[in-house]
Length: 269
Ligand SMILES: N[C@@H](CCC[C@H](N)C(=O)O)C(=O)O
Image (cartoon, rainbow, N blue to C red; front, top):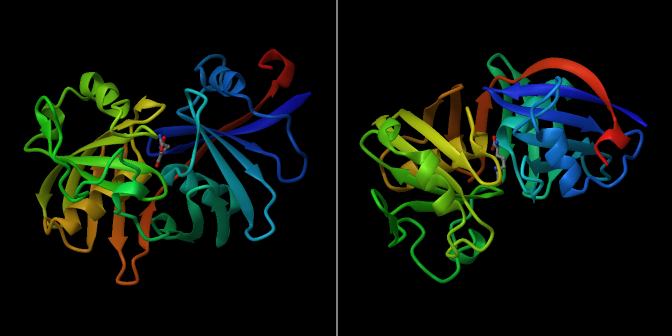
């Protein structure tokens, strides 16, 4: 069976998007996801995105990290799907319902309110999620936020100086995070500007992480370090993040279709 795909980017965080809204696909086993995510011959990605029909939304969106794990949420892929759908839409994810709206700066994505209870992150045992009493070498006392998926956010003097490729996987897989964790290191430049690098659970260092930007902005606001609307600068570009008074987060930024292709399912099954 020949399967078409669309290659998309959200600030350099890249996706292979499969569309099963009209025609179902066989099960995406972890080994197939890993093979499709492996970068070779015009295919490969940080996350594989599967669109399916939904009774309650324009589409259901399933998200698979490049290691094969299925996860709840992906901010940059939300915007990529917004570009593909091309009109205001509601998309159902395992992390909640997201609203997508094209606007002058790309796609505006409205996410459900973030969660801060320790068992909603989830953490292995009760602690204050605004300041976890934990540390890994120079990275200490992160905030924890669930924005559909789980994040810790470390605020540091200079996030470029943090050896994230070494500490990221150690923190991601620490047993205090029973579902593993996305690891954000952020530097607050001023009340409206944050610099961010992210070690993504199941994907490693990426050029940008939309949910990481949302989690970081909300953590900075909760700590009184930032206003309710900020620009988050990632290696791949900038996102605008607003935390509305009604609790919803709005992330706005670009996404791009790179190219379309197809692959033979049996070559990966
Ligand atoms: N790149 C994403 C996040 C993808 C999922 C994440 N790695 C997880 O495991 O939760 C984004 O833009 O938010």
